[in-house]
Image (cartoon, rainbow, N blue to C red):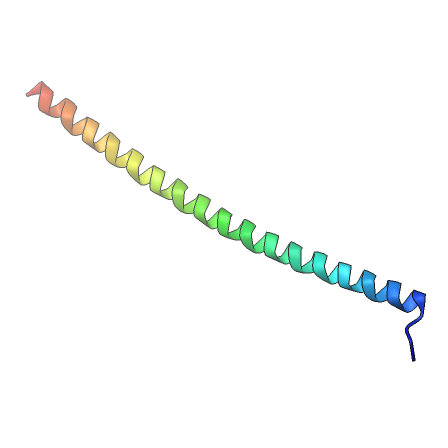
Length: 65
């Protein structure tokens, strides 16, 4: 039995909605990965900053002697 026009349109719309849901899922996965990388970079920057402060403190103390 051939599909009616309404059935065809409904299948097309269903496919479009499924495609959008899949795309949104991929976007959210990528967003989570970007957020994780951002957090790691922020922690790394804090570690580097604290190491630089420690080096400056040691250099200042060395200059005083």
